[in-house]
Each structure stands twice: as C-alpha cells, then as structure tokens.
Length: 388
Ligand SMILES: [Zn+2]
Ligand SMILES: [Zn+2]
Image (cartoon, rainbow, N blue to C red; front, side):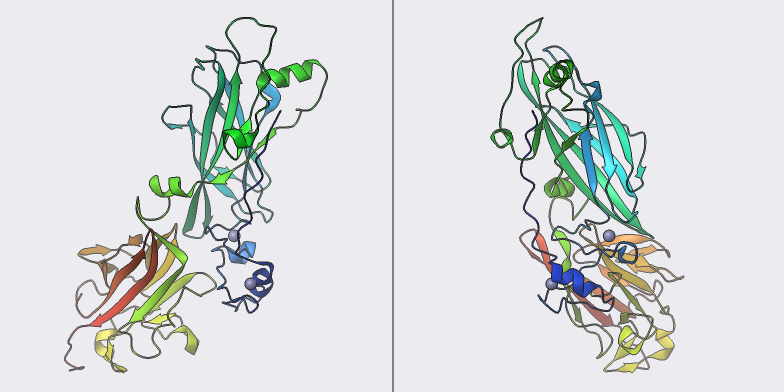
C-alpha cells in the first residue's frame, strides 16, 4: 500500500575523509579532499559536520510517521484525523525543538497546528493531531505537512523546515462494496509522497493481515525555498549567507585580521576586540584597535572592550553579538550587551557608541544570484590627535 520514493541522493559534503580529519579539533581543512571543515555549532556535544545544506545531521534528525492505529475508511463528505508522530532520531542526545507544524490541503492555505509540546529529547516522540478539511470529491487528495524545527546551543539557534506529502484516496459517498485500490507509484504523483489508504489498512486488519501495526514512515525533505520565504533562513525573499561564504578583511593592520576565507574557528564564531588575537594565543580572532600602519593609539583604543563583539553565521544570515558592557552602534542605532542582530549589506558597525567615528567596520555583501559570495569588512579609523 505504501509507496516510498527513493531517498534523495546523499550530499557530496562532507566525505568520510572529512569526518576522519575533523577528529583533530584544530583542523580547519580536510587534508585529504581539501574541503573546509564546517563544524556544527554544537560540535563539542555532537562532533558533527554541516552538510551542503547547512544542517548537522547528528543534531537535526527529525522523523515523521502516521499512526495507522486510528485509521478507518474515508468517503466523500468526511474528514480524517491524521495521528502524526514526530520523532527526534539524534544519536547523541541532542534535543530538537519543534517550533511550528503546518498542514496544507489540496488547494487550500497553510494552516498552523497547535502543538502540545516543543522540546523533543533524542529518541523520544510526540503526537500531533492533524485533521483534514472536508474531503468533498472522490479520488486522491494531497496534503503537505511542513515542520519548522530548531537546534540550540548556548545562545545560538539554527532553524530548518522539512516537508512531507501524503496522498489520501477518498472513496465515493454512500455504502459500497467496491473499495478502490490505488496502486499508484509515488513517482507518478510526486517524489517523497506517501499514499495513506485507511480503507485498505482497515480491510487488511479485518482480514488478519498484520502489515500495518507499525506507524507508517513518511519521507521528510528539506524545504529550503520555503525556509527563505517564511523568513526562517536567509534574507527574506532574497539571498543567503552560507557557512562557506568568504570573509574579506580590509583596512586592518598587518596581523590583526585572519586570512580571507570562510570562518575557520572550531566554534564558527569570530571574536573581535582590543585584546590580542588568536595567532598570538590571545582572546580574539580579530584584533580591533584604533591604529594606523601598525601604530596603535592606546589612549583612544582603551575604550574598545577586550572582547567587543562576535561575528558568526546563523540561519544563513550574517550575525553580530554584542559583548561590550558599553554596547555598540550599528548605523544610527545603539545596542546593548548580549543583543544578537542580523547584519545587512551596507551596515556600518561603530564599536564606540559615543565616538562613533573613531573606528568603524563597514559591511558589504558581494552577491551572486541568490547567495552572498563574499562579505567585505572594511575597517576605517577616524583622525585622532596622536595618530596624525
Ligand atoms: Zn574530506
Ligand atoms: Zn551537531
């Protein structure tokens, strides 16, 4: 009865060699295939690498199935309860947060479902009661289920949308001995679609065939277009910043900024501030001071915190977290410590709220089609007495 589409072909990254290489915590590139190692933000707990789509399959492993138990026949004019079971198959004990579940019938709008739970511990399941609207015509009815799930680590969170489709055959109105058999290949109606035929489950049960005692597994697919359209990932309706996006450092004095390229730290976060930077065993990845040609204006730079802010990529957006007690200014707006905000093309970061021209970092996106290819970060230093 159930036709399953073949699972989508496995992604090309990461390869086995990348996992081997990533066991060395200091490795930033795979020394076998040369790919940069994109570690999951929770790598300390999961050891995972992000796949091509920016997901850690160790942390984000949702499953969906339909409980066959309550299925009965469905006829024109009726509605059907869909006892949906959501599961968290993370093998390393990472909780999964089910933020939203939506259902869409044949030609209807997306409808949001009230969820009785949000946090799913690994290995556990939660049941969600979905109901179709009135099934008013005979034949196959298609339903799409969309789940928005999140993984969290410290103050970070990544959200993803997954979708699955169910086709439900609806029998003609009134009593009928002839029960239709829909032996349609899933491919004929769309990849990843599961045919859910309650009439047949009922028949087989009555005949003593115990084929459907177990829940029916649904095929989940990433819904990346939807993620962007609904505002869960990327810049709404336009482009995305990937973990592989190249950062380009301009206007920094020698040794203050890392080499151009994707963020390479194990945590995926870059720290910027007055304290010395990582190559010297310091607190930061980027040293942010008021300097020119290597000459530091110590008196002016003292107002920059030892760790002033952090940069990272989350949900396909370029993010900044304020670390300084004194806050930070982005364009004209001041932000307090602990605030996490999204940086946009053309933004200017002013680390010093009061003397905002003393030092600034301009953010410029170089966009190719719907992806940000490079982010150019340009430090500008204002004219100050001791430097001129
Ligand atoms: Zn590799
Ligand atoms: Zn992970």
